[in-house]
Amino acid sequence: MKIALVGASGQAGSRILNELSQRNHIITAIARDTAKIASLPGVTAAQGDIADPEGLAAVLKGHDVIISSVHFTDFDKDKLIAAVKASGVKRYYVVGGAGSLEVAPGVPLNATPEFPAAVKPESEGGARYLEALKAEEDLNWTYLSPSALFVAGERTGRFRLGTDQLLVGPNGSSISFEDYAIALVDEIEAPRHERRRFTVGY
Image (cartoon, rainbow, N blue to C red; front, side):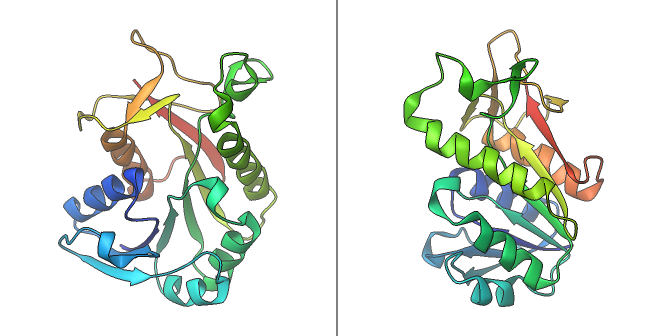
């Protein structure tokens, strides 16, 4: 598939880029600084900025799929959604956050006393973005939340999927960037969570 990846140079984005390349997709890797994008088979680097929705829409046009992997505090949600819609690409995948996952019925992770204050703005931004997507009628979106600990690690291919509840394993709630990338690309190749959020963890 022809896939546009916004935020291709970030921690999660770079792993997603690598996974897409390994699976022989054709990727337009978009970042504000293209020098930070890895040189991989099937990858073309492109400059794009969410602050310029018209310019970004032009870069996104003509792809089968768009993925955004960007910090929610770094952009205006309405501008990114506008750029995706203006591109005419119907399939849209979002690297989401864990904070809005439930730890008990009606209780999101980011409402618990132990949730770090430093990451609360990012978490709340992710929750608002998810709600904005739910209101969109013209996009076939999917929002993939990681587990609470989202870090560099191994590509094992061994993980669990869930929906709106935080996944907790024997060693807590975690997922590597590498295994998250597998789960996301699996979903792109064989969609099972259209117009909804799901989560991945050990």
